[in-house]
Length: 287
Ligand code: GUN
Image 1: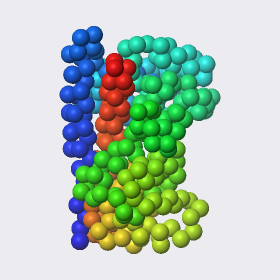
Image 2: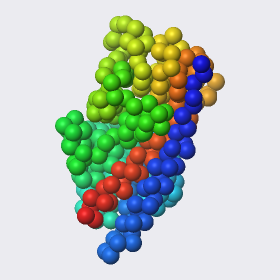
Image 3: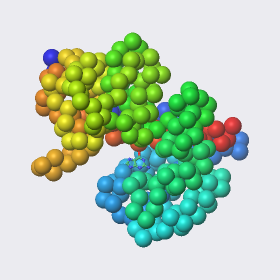
Image 4: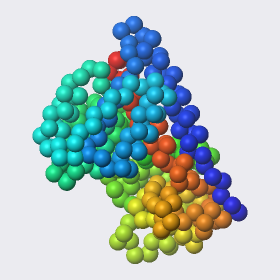
């Protein structure tokens, strides 16, 4: 068998096109307007600059008005919190995204909590986390990466109901919310992590394997059940400077049934779901 490669970029363009139609519908209502996203970047981390540029371009494709706020690396936490307060009170701003990581003088938890839960389009606020955990789809926003992973699984043609899903990684941004979303889709879910002893025994049971460990090429072919759907959340540079994920694509591709590439898999879907959340925020604010 050789895995079908799931085209995350094409799927992201579809999600953006649907977002564009909703954005245009909002703009053509009496008293309506286009959705607005504020993107805040502190410092000049090269990877963050690339992410922010990609987010801005996706906003243009989807008819979302994005405004970038670039602050110097020595910005204080107080200054950043003041900007967020201003954006919280700006009626043209539906969503606020503060690009992570932040410089070390700024506490990211304080920043995430300061964003109005109504504008938390990254889905990192504890209200969004609580809404997800308690099944309140009318409140909060779903974190973009795991929400995009669910769409990629759907695109693979596999329905998670009754299947074994294994998530590698337990971060607040991916692993934990991913487990909840898979549970909501009626999968039997196991989360494994760096302290798990018999990792490969567990991953080999997975019909759906979501790899968000943050370790380059750690998932090898002998850790994968034949025919499984494998989703690669990682993004790293390998020893030759080439982009790679958490999955060793060379050994996994012959075993898996479907596989997301890096780049062109989860990355573009994360951005598309950010746009989706921003349009949803505008729909709520204009309701
Ligand atoms: N840094 C890396 N990924 C993300 C993301 O999804 N959102 C934010 N705000 N920062 C990030």
